[in-house]
Image (cartoon, rainbow, N blue to C red; front, side, top):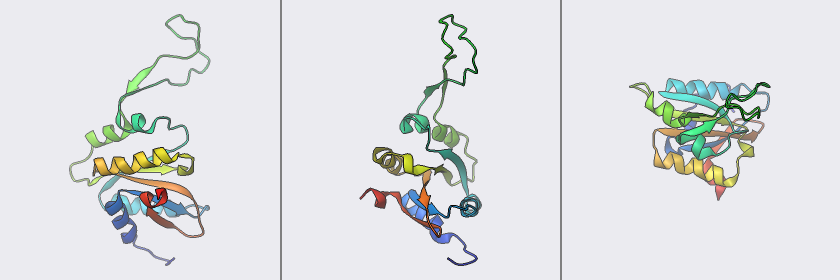
Length: 157
């Protein structure tokens, strides 16, 4: 890999395919450079982790219930269980799209630890980018000696 890279081929791949699988060196640093290049080209970047994501479709695009950590406190409703109240929040991708700046090209969902995603969840991420062209997905699938990337749909074949 060149000492100085512009990242234009990465940005073209993200814009063309919509969902990209990334393999980065384990010592880190490369991800930040490519995130910065995506931001400079007009995208808003949202960082997520695949662990604990739950239902990917609901978390990204639909209203869904969440329970904050109870921290040992009892439920106010009187059930005696330390589960807390359920709050309903919009999907993170749909919320970010609603609050997108005027000049922005769209949002990038940068998902780390993507190797824990099932094949069905990866297929959903590919179809999400096809259904909504303003959403792009970058999934870190593992480590490699150099920064490499390819369309996520190519991994599913």
